[in-house]
Length: 136
Image 1 (cartoon, rainbow, N blue to C red):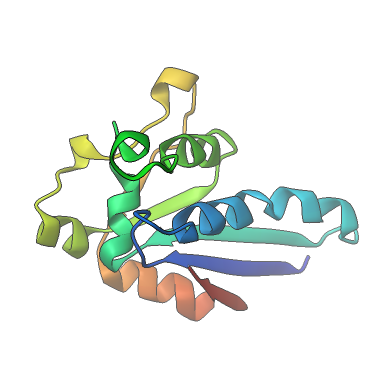
Image 2 (image 1 turned 30 degrees about the vertical axis):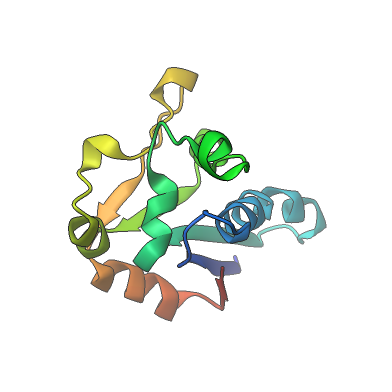
């Protein structure tokens, strides 16, 4: 069985930028490629937030009121609903003073998957093991 690992790295904040939403959308879209794969082939994506990109993981965003753009919160909830692995850099959360209770979850929508707060070393290993790494 051939497994192609993909790493989607979000490193910019969502303010005045579509990058986080594009990264999340691309990671969610991996499911559509399954119809093009041969039997036994799989695609395994990991959506990782590092640097200023961790700001896209805050819940209760007020992006429309402050910046006149939609937030990435619903996109992240959708990613969790489709069982996507979402990793957030622990060191960057700490740098911004963000605690785990301040990041998005999709329990209210019935998702079993949760965002994983991990050290950068774990994200680095995801990037090293991925066949393709895409930065947003």
